[in-house]
Length: 520
Image (cartoon, rainbow, N blue to C red):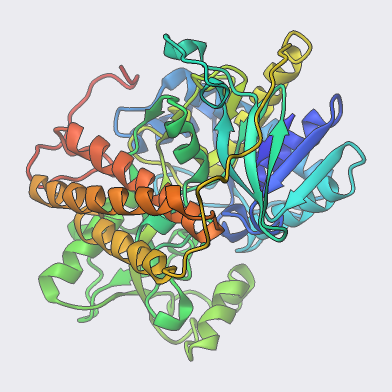
């Protein structure tokens, strides 16, 4: 089996698959450079049946999803959470304890405390444990600094497929970044776990590797893509240029921190009765509204009323990062602004993580599983990654021996390409694209803004495609090409949705009102 990506979804799948078959993991950077590594909050799960229930977690998820969740998918995921969290504990993940029990935090949209976490660095702790196990596993080969470029389908065999459901995936072409060569990876089952798309926006909490590579590859291979308009903007990132949009976890608001404007007014109750614990889309739009109305550059997160020792014990990494910039979170208010954070859409998959292309799976943020709907409930992302890695690996293993194909895959054709000295065009085009998306396809949208974004994206697309076909590939060029595809998918999906719903807020259309919780 071949896995593209090395976050929680990919590594979890790899470890379980390696119990039965040989596994290869491809990642374009080092193994740990993933969105998982930067996840602070935790994993949502019903771990205290005295105060919580599966029904409550399901309902919180459906409410946050604004009527576009698949209720069955949500129910299946929520009910598997305790088992999946216990698996991580068995692997050796040290979650934070309180009185000998899991310390359960509360975040926006949750009705009770149910977030399992490792202080304020959950992703880092989980990634460390799983990465170590993967690297030491005798049945797993890890290929770091290998950039998956294109899915191998009938297209590269010169075969025309008349019906889209008949497309098959045989593996990928991948650029060995250090050697500068393009290699062919064949696999009976291929899994895309390439993470998010945050780099398509000028401001993001994501690492620079989050360029939507898996979604872009799948789109070019004609896989079904869904709900790309639903991009979640995290409400609170540190508004200090040197901090590079450092994320201030939602758990801090769950702990009692208040959002205030420059005048000191705690404004969230003006927008939603849940105040600081409203779902992220509401909080992000409230902050955006405050900034635009007042002309301020930031709002402020105030944790100074929380008991100091408890605050520092619970959020040591945030305290450390703020201290680098001269802020003492026990005494100083923290300047924050929203930033692109998480994609609720992606490659459409079924309950087993299967895409519309045969032998191709998608899991994690790369996939659209319908559990998030129009807005992800806080800390459901790592749970989704675990759940769909689990269902996908069991399905793939069950069908592994039944998969037989014999194809003669050609080597990557480099004829007619050359090294080009105009690489400055790549960096300029990337920054232009990111600013276009931030200005016109961000937290608040309009029909006019979307049309303007599409015109500019189209110009960049033609320019970069011409450059791509005559130039030797580099990681920077591959990422730019993928980002342009991602931008197109987001813009088109946003233009087609003639309503404001969840994370998609268009000032020219009414807010959706649904009685059904199942996406039709």
